[in-house]
Every structure is written in structure tokens, then in C-alpha cells.
Length: 158
Figure 1 (cartoon, rainbow, N blue to C red):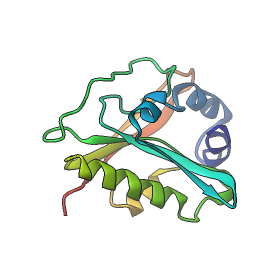
Figure 2 (tube, one colour):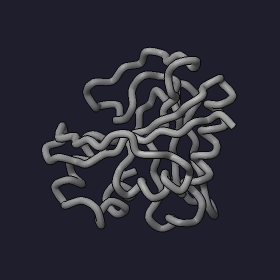
Figure 3 (cartoon, rainbow, N blue to C red):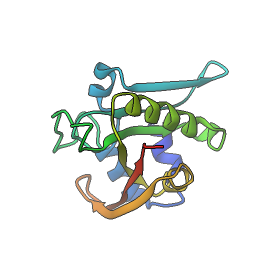
Figure 4 (cartoon, rainbow, N blue to C red):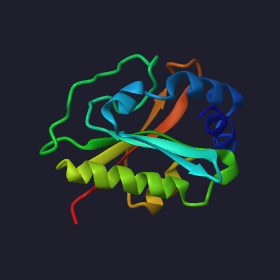
């Protein structure tokens, strides 16, 4: 996660924004407890990780303020893509697409019709290629410097 934040965001963010991003991002252990987090290995090494959630928190790690573990209603609420990270040594090798496909299938199987995420600028090209659309651009300064983020959404209905 740290390598992905530090290296993959370097073309998009200043060093201060990367430090701020570290403070507001990270693993939400609720995803592991819920069994909705995936880890991908290539040649025995960690290549990427990410998950989805049936809970209200849109983004952030265990220490991020504003978390909400309330369960979402699949009939009316979008599921959440959460904590997506690809190791810098294996970007553009299908790791992110594989995780996205696993998350979308699992959320669809639980009855969710839509799915959304809060994307970083470095992740936006992948998510656009996977059929997501930007619905809102925001800035999060809880880590000290203002970090640009994009709320993105996709329909899971065929």
C-alpha cells in the first residue's frame, strides 16, 4: 500500500499531497473481517489488493475519521470499491482489472445494482476503462494537504 501510494501517485500529486494521502488512505480491516478483500500475487510476490464493501464508509483506512459501518441496502444503495492498491512494479499487467472484476461480481451476487468508489487521480484511467464515470470531484485535506479525489460510479446491471 505504501509503495503504491508513494510511487503510483507521484505523477499526479506533490510530496505534501502524497504524505496527506498516506494519512487518509490505507486498509480498512472491516473489509477483511467481512471477507470482501482480495490479494493478488504474481510469482509469489504481492502484486495488488483491493475489495468491496456493503458498508457505508466510502474510503479511508482504520484510522481515518468519519467511518460508518452501517450496512447498505442493495436495493437502493451502491456497494463500495475500497482500498485498491497495485504494486508499482506490476502496474498495467491486469492486476487492478482482476480485482475490479472480482469485486463487481461479488457485489452483484449480493444483489447490488450499482457500485461506487472514491478514486485517486492515478486510479482514474483504470476505472474509466472499467466503465466507471465520474460523478463528483472533491478535495480531502484531513491529512494536512488537500488531496484531489473523484467519486465514481458504475451500474452492475447487465
